[in-house]
Length: 180
Image (cartoon, rainbow, N blue to C red; front, side, top):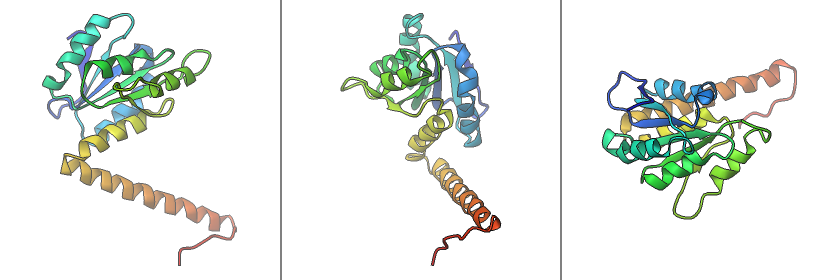
């Protein structure tokens, strides 16, 4: 399919990352890295809800049979892409608003968060590509024990990093609360 690139060597993609514009690639790149870190196969497509609606319909209607289990849809401004995709599939859709235009992504965030009943889009914060990927990984991890184990190790690592950073309080000579 035109505009589609497989970014994994681990088999059929399970996550689709849709971008409304190629200009969003840099803002979305933390999602690619996060999915790679968890070994989740994914694909990337640039499809505009406004400029290529027929291509979007074709892409979405075949997503499930291609093995896609979660779709991350990144868009700015009016941010129609996540809602348009959610209207076409029965897969989880994660909306990723990107900073764009005079409102710096707030318009995109609100558009994604205010979907009509029956067309749900789980939405992360503006430029929250890493969280979008982590949410996709959590959805997959609910059904895949190997991903769930990786998530648990990730969470433990995050906790250890936070505790180490807490030691900076003592290093600065400040009174530090300690667990009893």
